[in-house]
Length: 501
Image 1 (cartoon, one colour):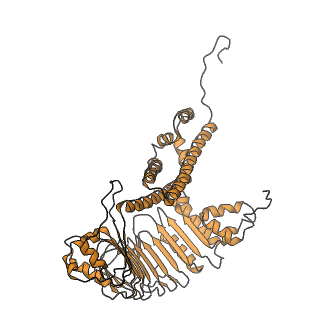
Image 2 (spheres, rainbow, N blue to C red):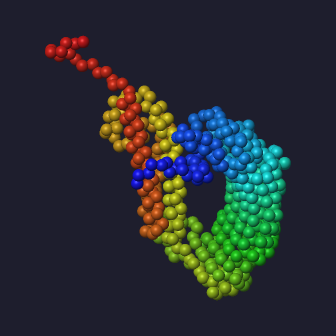
Image 3 (cartoon, rainbow, N blue to C red):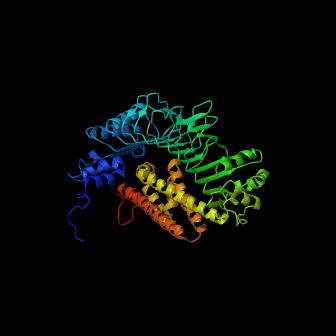
């Protein structure tokens, strides 16, 4: 088609802003050199994203953030801000970002700090009537005596250090996510909120236990222990995967319909505790248990003397959690007569699904393949961002003819491995890419033919094309660098017809 107009530039500003937001603030600003149409487009972006990985030094990263915020100071509204620090962070810069977010009615704020050192977050006088979603990932210490976020609906904290009462001034908080957080309490840590409906707890330490007092809670997902639900009468679904079953209820669960429990039990545990837990789940309709927990129930004599508590059960699913990806076929998943009678006697019409070891292995392989491919995408991005700088430095002091000969006789990947032997970080990244490619290839061969396998293979093939293209580009870059350097002068001995100069 002969298209004379610039179709991209003719798009509405809100569409262009969404495209620019996907590439980060640094690349968005570069578009200002395209034409007069693009010169100031980035200054009205409602979504700002910053990453220190885009800069060689922290000072340049800090200057860039200050420049962007100063250019956007006249904007009435900024919808979201995302900042990622990978090495250093200063209180002054974080405070400036927060002040900008408050003054521009930001609704989503995400700050990530990936260094293993606790930093007290400058929220001592934080007050916003517009912030709805806050994500803090990193070793932050949150002490918030005067913190008020009346509109905050979602709070996502990863590896933060918390004190009791940290959520008390968030009147509209609905979703709380705490992952690997340090509860700064010598006794129990209290999560007390009248309006919280969704709660995710993964890992965590620093306290004896966690008391959950949430009258409106409906959808908890918990892998921390021990947990005590003091007041949560409106639970609708429950996912628990905390290893050793340390979960107690002090409230009736009249509305609970869906339960997924993955627990590891031992004979040292009190058997009556598990039986009491199952009695509390009497209204559940859809129950999922891991095979290891079911086998433990078979050794509990108490269940043979009690009636089945599940009178409303419609579906029971049993699956093996501990599956070795390298072992051969395992015996069929079975359930003893006593356990089956205890779980299903009061609901004879309930369906039973027994997931085999092979099916569970397939699911784990699919998850593992997706994880590896995601990691490969991240490594490829990092390589592309840093390759030119590293290559220029690594080429210093190497003879151009020597490099050309290596390129002509060796495979590109092996060449780059040798080139990066004196750069530990660069070489480690290269080896990781090769290792992940090989691991993913092996995993995909173990997944049975299905639509999932076809989609995974297609995505992996595209990633492999990116890997090959990247290696080709790097090799071409070396050739260009060699061509730019002057040829080495080689003295030729004089002949009879050509006198020596």
